[in-house]
Length: 436
Ligand SMILES: [Fe+2]
Image (cartoon, protein in one colour):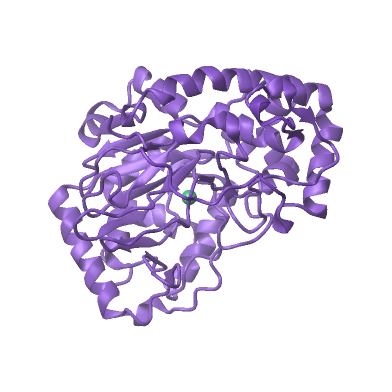
């Protein structure tokens, strides 16, 4: 079935023994604060409920392929928006593919421009990982700016942001554009560096009191009331409490990328766990419980013991995204429930909720480069406005985003750099010119 992972990649496992960087005083304090605030009884009640819900969810997902990821067409969204039924599917799965956001010929031409620029400036553009730099830390190339300011992108991001609600009048779905990098992954390049993980910080989900509030219903015994689309609480959460290149300072309602070349399963694409609320509930509860000694009992949530003592958060490192693995998070049945997204053509986009588990395809057996530009949907919030303003000030003098301070390249000096002239008014608005 398309989308099913036949052979689980040899990604790193977490949860056999604690590693030094997954425990310590910051971890102990965060754990103690959550327990003091919500108590053992509520945490245990949620743990049992969430593990029970996972039984049904994982059973369902294990039989589905990439059809578990809703697919929409830009034309349809442009003409009618998303229907109530489509919105419900998107909110429940937390992800979607939107086809033909950029016309294919235009996307292909933009890829050629980016590739040419990357080749011309090979020595100057930093890449990651160092041994095979496929993730390019370039932010305002003509290709990226053209796509970030494309009318379809703006409309689509507004549509996605509007799935979130906030009654404070301090936010709006109007998109602000976060500058992120690009990827040109040559055929044959294996990459095991980004197994199942969740971005938007890691330990800060428990350590920041406001971020913790996002999961209040989960911690207080009523995970069924958790609203993954409540921007009113989320807008003030500090994702950047533990500063690191792996964490973004802005709130991205949906992370996303736009394909510049064809991609497919095992050909340099993305994998998603197409559920948001139940998975994140399990992830935030997991550090409070220890597995039973007998491995045969591991899937029996009632046999896990409440553990207030250990300061170990499996898969949680302060400077990394939240990592997940079959050993550390067994009830998620990752091997059966993480799915390849469908085949993508140049100009197609994929979007996944800020709390969603995802992974980068370890294989690229396709022909040619697998190339994407990372373009997320960011609503207008006080934190995002402040960030996008400083980001634009940095961009205008050739620098990368303020949450990637180690990138020391003046993009204005790169061959092929064109700057911000000629960008539409609507495009300038999403780039933050109105905030200067
Ligand atoms: Fe990620």
